[in-house]
Amino acid sequence: MFSSLSDKLGGIFSGLTGKARLSEEDVNEAAREIRVALLEADVALPVVKDFIETIKEKAVGADITKSISPGQQVVKIVHDAMVEMLGAEASDLQFVTPPSAYLMVGLQGSGKTTSTAKIAKFLTDKQRKKVLMASLDTTRPAAQEQLATLGEQTGVDTLEIIKGQSPLEITKRALKEAKLGGYDVVMLDTAGRLSIDEELMNEVTAIRDLAKPVETLLVVDAMTGQDAVQTATAFNEKVGITGTMLTRVDGDARGGAAMSMRAVTGKPIKLIGVGEKWDAIEPFHPERIAGRILGMGDIVSLVEKASETIEAEEAQAMAEKLKKGRFDFNDLLTQMRQMSKMGGMGAMMNLLPGLGKMAGQLEAAGMNDGMLKTQEAIILSMTPKERENPKLMNASRKKRIAAGSGTTAQDVNKLCKQQSDMQTVMKRIKKMGMGNMMGMMKNMMGGKADELDLMAKSMDPDALGKDMDALQSAEPNLGPNPFAAPGGMPAGLGGPALPGMGMPGMGLPTRGGTKKNRKKNKKGKRK
Image (tube, rainbow, N blue to C red; front, side, top):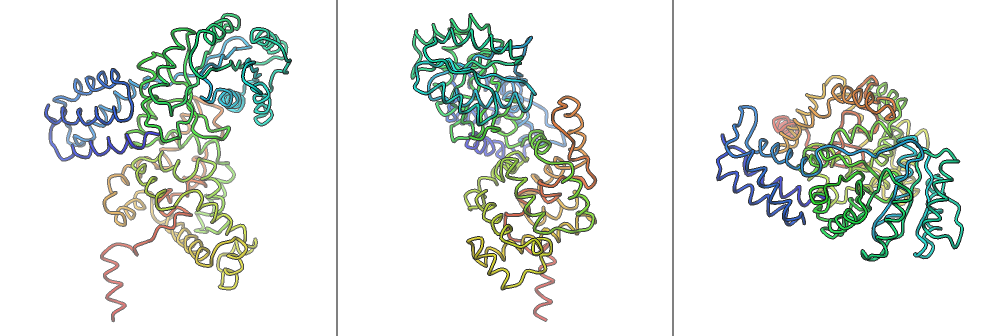
C-alpha cells in the first residue's frame, strides 16, 4: 500500500547525502518534493500543509553530527512528524465490566461483516476473550446467515437467528444472551448502505443509545482513498466513533486514507486488515507504519510474528544442527513452511531495514511464494531417506522426483544446489560471527553495504533476544522467546542466513567469493 510513497521518499532522501549541513534551500527543495509525493499518495491537502510546516520548522538549520548524514537527519525529522500525523501512539481496544459491547458501523462493501469475524477471532486468540457475535442487518439478504457461517469458520459463537425481529430487538436479545452466557465481548454488526443517509444514521444512533458500546468501530475500505476519510468524518459527527479499522491495506491503494484519517477525524486507527486470512489483522502502530513507509523496516513486528509461529522445540533442534553444521531437506522444508506462516518471503523482507525495494524486485523476477510451493512439492516427492541424506541424490532419483512433483530435473538440481549452499553456510556460521557474515555479504553485494550494516545490527540474535524479553514482560501472551534458544536465530528465519540473502527457495547466484579470490582461481585454472 505504501510502496510507491516509500520509493519516492527514498529517492528524495538519497539526494541529500554528502552535505555537511542542511541549508534552508535544501530543506525547501526537499519539502517541495515531499509535498508532491504526499499529494500523489492521496493525502488530504490540509494534512500535507501541516506536515510540511512541521518538517521545515524542525529541519532548517539543524546541526548535523559527525556520525550522521543530512539524509539520515531528514529521515528522522520526517519519521517523527509522520508518527505524530498517524497518531503518535497505538490505541488499544478498550474493555469494561463484561459484557463489553462493540458496535461495528460502516457502508456496504467495506468488509464490515468479515472484519467483525476477524476482530472476534483476534480477541479470542490474542486477548483470550469469550466473544459473541450478533448480526443486526435485517435489510441485506442473507446477512445474518453470512455472519453465522463466519462464526462456524472462526470458531466464535453467534446469536441465534430469529426471523422478523428488528435491529433493536436483536440488540436487546444479544446483550441479554452475552450477560447470561458469561461473554466478555458482544459484537454488534449493524446494517450498511451504499451511501450515507438519514435512515442509516438514525438506526445506528438508536442502537448506540441502547447498547452503550465501549467501542464504536468504523470499518472503511483503504482502496476508496479520501472517500474513506469523508465517510469517517460523517459517522463521527452523527454517531461518534471511537476508532476505525482499515481493510485491504495489503492492496495497491496509495495510502492517503491511512495517513489522513487520524489528522482529519481526530479518531485513531485501531486495526488494519492485511489479507484475506482470519489472522490477517494487526493493531495499528503509528511508529512501525512510519518505519515501513520510510524504508526503516519493522523489526519489532517481525519478532512478534516469529514468537507467534516459531516453536521453542524447533528452535532448539535447529540450534543443535547449526553446531554440527548439518542442514538437510527436512530443515529446508521447515524453513519454507515457517516463512509462509510469517506472511511469506515478500512480507518478511518488507519488515527488514533496507530490503523493501528488493522485495519488489524479487517479485518482478518471479521469486515469490509460488516458487516456494513448487520447491515444497519437490521435497515432498522425495523419500524420507533422501530428505535426511542429500548425498543419495543421483540422476535417476532426480528424474523420479521431478516426475512426481510435476517439475523438471533442472528445478530439482537448483533445489539441491540451494541445500548444498545452505549446508556450507551452516558450517561457516560457527567459525564466523554475524558481523563477519554481513561483511562477506557486503563484499558480494557492493552497493548495499550501508543497508547490510544496518541489517547486521538489527538482526543480532542477542539484541533480538533482549527485545523479546522486554515484549514478553509487557505482553505475556506472546509465548516463549525463540531467540533465547542456544545458537541465536530461530528456525524459520533462515538461521543467520537472512531472508533474501541465500535464503532457501531464493535461488540467487553466488559470485565465488571476493574479486581478488576470483582472479586467483582464474589464474590457477589457466595454469
